[in-house]
Length: 208
Ligand code: ATP
Ligand code: MG
Image (tube, rainbow, N blue to C red; front, side, top):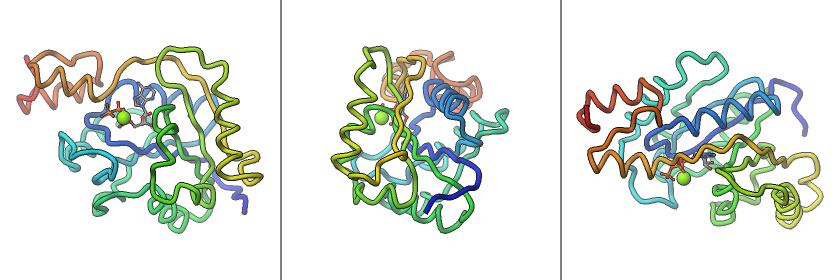
């Protein structure tokens, strides 16, 4: 059933730590789709990843600091208790809690490519539409077709009008790179929001 309420982007991830790539893609998808709001949802303990570098409460806090000035961005802690956290369960919970909202799951290209290893991904479209966006530089001419084909293979005719691809400005930043810089004692300034930089510096997790 189609929902007529506000279009909300659901942006899940480990955000370990959040960086400017996350914020920029969220902003661009919100603006160009367009969506009314983007809800950031840090993963409790992602099933397909090893343990996070920063604990959940710290990742949540860093997102809060990062999005404070943006009225269209919100952060939800609904995966706090979930160990491991399943995207499908989160989507189901959200659609029960917010019955009027029209949800769109945001997935970067890499996340979309590994989606078929996620728990019950075939059920995603019951609760949300899907917006896949480009990640980094590259030739994205074929991406829209690849997304369409995959969507048709997985969801059949139900995918019609529910799965989208958007090319966004390339931001070659990953949390992996940032963690590596932190571990080497190097600066992460200007790769992350200033508030994240100052917080981690305060915690002596990055160089002065
Ligand atoms: P890690 O290196 O730890 O995997 P990450 O930078 O990939 O971290 P995640 O928290 O894994 O960040 O990503 C959450 C979502 O954000 C995913 O859908 C991912 O594709 C997307 N994403 C992260 N960084 C970028 C970026 N620089 N450009 C586009 N999409 C991104
Ligand atoms: Mg990642």
